[in-house]
Image 1 (tube, rainbow, N blue to C red):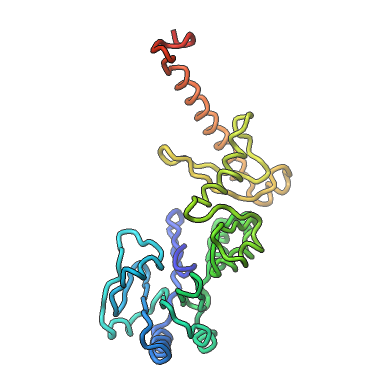
Image 2 (tube, rainbow, N blue to C red):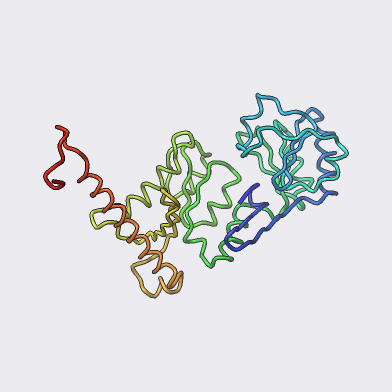
Length: 285
């Protein structure tokens, strides 16, 4: 899910949903911004491409999400910009965003993030919560069974949609007030801290990782165990069948098997490790 839900890709099902701002509406928005605050810096994201008429200063680069393999937008002329149907329009330090929202509120969503420094404009039907619901409809999972992380105003709808919202420590107060849990900040690996608390600690116990009522599905990729969390009542057979049925039962067995395998591998590795004097321990002689 990208661009606040305007672009969704599902490789396993070979599905994609792309909601862009119509060219005519984009042109009107550009003219409105240029007339109200002509010195504003505007950027345009179209699918996986990034454009601007003005080169991005180093002082502003940190305001944007990191982009894989593309540190700066492509500088193009205004005629090209006016021909676009952008996935998202970004405006830096635009103080008139409330007026923009009132003028175009029926066509687009206008959200100010990063303490009002960055204004994000997407199609009216594009949002994180709607994008998550679209994916959940495709895979047959209820939003009550989803854990979500967020830190700014564009995550509020997602928090109200999902069953277990977790606010980042650096997040806004409005998110923290409706979160089930507040984790560490982005810089302090808050997502990893929460996953360890609510997922890994649930499976890494004395019973070799019994799956708890929170519901855990573990899928191994190379040397990494990837964890997908579904907040499911596994202690009730009828609820289990209604929510996920045989798929979750299979996932539970796979989780336990992989945890046991890792546990045995760790024990064997410790047995083979030389003692402090350089000799093998008794069990390995």
